[in-house]
Length: 296
Image (cartoon, rainbow, N blue to C red; front, top):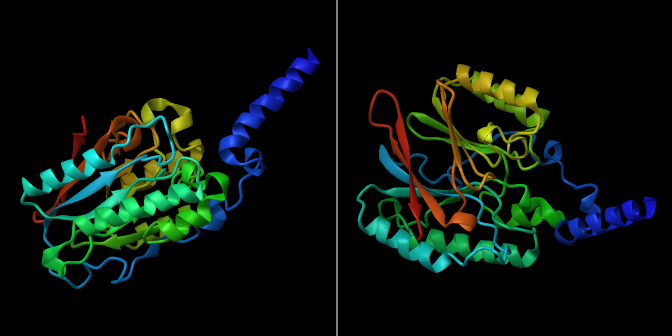
């Protein structure tokens, strides 16, 4: 019996290490407390709309869980770029930037990040912004748990704009926060810095990150620390957060907390979905809605 158990353990961890790397089957470097200690404000190069007469009604492209390197997923790229081109040609509202909610790579391998780089560059180049000097459309990333596999953190950091995992920027009536939950938690340094930022601002806030708060009550797909989750919900309710947008749970989910809404958007890789965030800052209070587009 002991021999069977021992063999089972060897097989289990061997299969695990095939995708994670042997060392990381037991331990992973670059924990969140080292990766993300401060929610940094982007400068005018990183967020090129600073100082520009930015449109008050605009769209944002959202993708989640692309998982380049997962051979079980269909190759959606050709359909995606054709669909996005058609969408832009038939809608007059400007699409100003793209947000990718983590898990761009499936195993964290260098070859996968080369594919990520080419994909994000194509999004940027094919959707240039004539009203803003014809600049490439910015693509903003948050890091996902799969992105860290096989010591993928450094490759993610080098590849994925704006090359930091915890940051924010401001538009006229909104603050947009991009948080690092790739380890299933914000960690204390990032959480405390976020509280400081929120305390100093009365603007409406949007949150973008990888892990859901709730995920239909499925523990594996939610933030791992119940206390942290409760603290975040309380903080958001008191500081004008209106949207918490995440990925990780591929089928997607929605939950209304009365004070704010949580959208876990459907996966690009698994389900061939992408999303358009419609934003209107022209009224007294900012308004938004999320539209889901299927590639099939």
